[in-house]
Image (cartoon, rainbow, N blue to C red; front, side, top):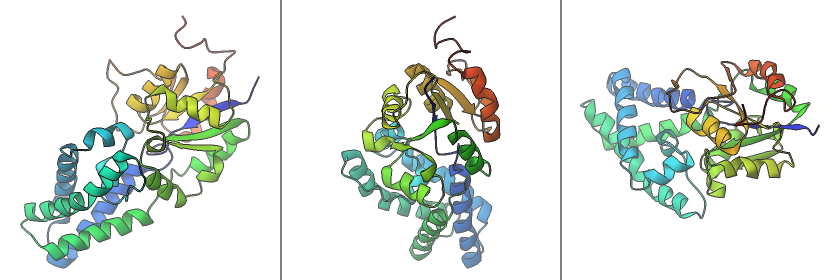
Length: 273
């Protein structure tokens, strides 16, 4: 039997994106508290609310949502690249960042252009310096890489995702790294998984998609006729209409114990009785 492929997600699967974003916002808000005495927790809540509101109202939100770019990345990413969507984001984010920090300070009755610029810079610095990896990730990838072909399949902007990876030791553990906005195809589109399999020279038989998102990773795997393991981080509650994963785990170290049950000679083909 050919070596099986494992297609891993990045954000909140291997690299703790939400943790990095929220802690970096908190660092900036603590700086504001030190400067002015403003309530850091209230300011933190305002930043999260205002950033999400402005991001959802953006003219390029549809592209960002499709490619898997969110406001936390909009507050620090450069979005380099020639794709029209990336150029649009690149033009949008300077004003977005300014409006988020201005708006949050105004909501806290602490307006100030200079302070808003300082908080913007503080967030960018903190976020770029902080790429927290799941404590089990390196060990689990090394173990699974002994008898599987590994590919990373991540939604997002190429420069942003690669900068995250550059702050970790994850990249060398993958035979290929596939990023949605480089292809113009994003999860859950099944074609992105086919691209990854071709890139690592692996067969579809036995391939498993591993990620934290039911709507992107698990649904994408189902659409592609692939098996899936859902990394349940506790932030997504399954809905009746959601795709159903072949296995659910709460820790990366639990993955191997489920792979044998998903082997081609044990599991029936996707869609069969």
